[in-house]
Image (cartoon, rainbow, N blue to C red; front, top):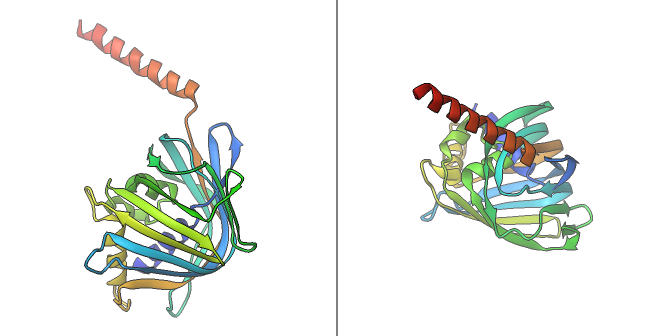
Length: 246
């Protein structure tokens, strides 16, 4: 079971890609990507600082990051992860499944639409060339945007912050992460638990190969009119309650 959760973790994390607007308030991030992964540094003296290396990449990631606010998310796609076991792990979700709702908060992003093409080694932010970047967001929000990457384990991540510095080029994607844990074990704690699971090498790293076919995370942002209706409804309920109390 823990290995299957790892497959979902790696796969859904990698669906965190650029997006296109389906219609007003709905944004779909997609990924068709394959390569190698190596996650390390989560079991040393500074576990909250670690590195994710994706190498030998081919394919495309298309990512849209919605504005700060309340969103609902869904995911779909087929992810195959080979961590060195007897049989590669496959997580297939052909139809959209709900991930829940939450508040998205990010800072430091330059742009909202990112396209990373590792086959041609061209990377853009809102149409302009980039070679990497940095941003900070809440751990719970990132878990939602990444497709609830740890499934049931995601509930233990907590509500701390995650700061990312990443670089792109030559078919590689290097991601340096610094996080704080509030009310949970954080991403690093989950990596350590996966590394220590029965059958693992317990060598302070999680590595292997992966492929994503038609991976996607669909985020819906309530439109202002919908939010206004919610506000009016709440105001009406409050007025009714006051009237009954009187």
